[in-house]
Image 1: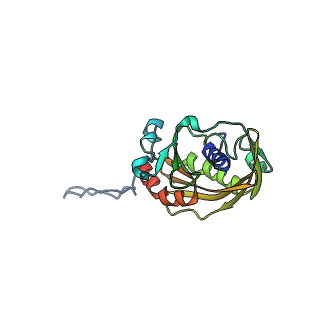
Image 2: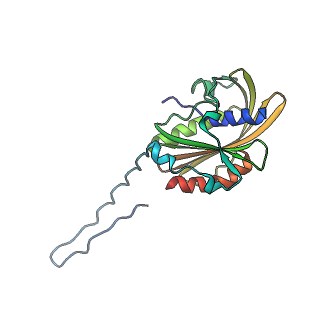
Image 3: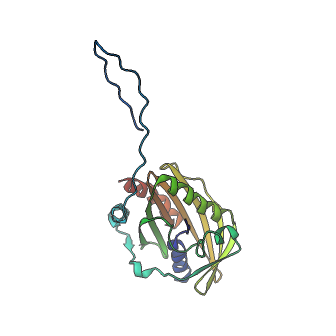
Length: 225
């Protein structure tokens, strides 16, 4: 599978820089004996459709009146070139900050926080089997944090990126988090990106560190359905 990280991260940075299962047993009757049977293995959660994921995205009701949703047309789709991080280059041409994670079902939304200049939060939901969601997401995050300094070129704009691995939140079945600093034209933008896998759903929240911390738990709760 070709893996790619999120476009929302780079697009938001450019915008900011530019402006138990349980078992049961039967009770034996007088004429028979029931032996203990091993519990049936838990069935893996089925993947959700993109339509189902869309209904589990955060919206203005969840975030509050100070948030405005951006239309999809507001986000650019420029080519991304990675420089100085072979691990990311091996994941695909726009692996550092382009496209979307390469899972079959997805939904996303980006919001502007109107009380703070250039503050945004983006949420992306993906669904696949757990044995694909977890390892593939781990590979991307390890590749990004494994290169503490590298560069991407988005369209014609060069952006220097520094990464720092952060402690994963105690949410879901697996979690990853990182802090990224984007530098372009002498200006820095600090963004946080956290991913949480809950069963067959992966929640990725990116944006201003304070906004990510504020809304991550609610995003995971709603994504669980």
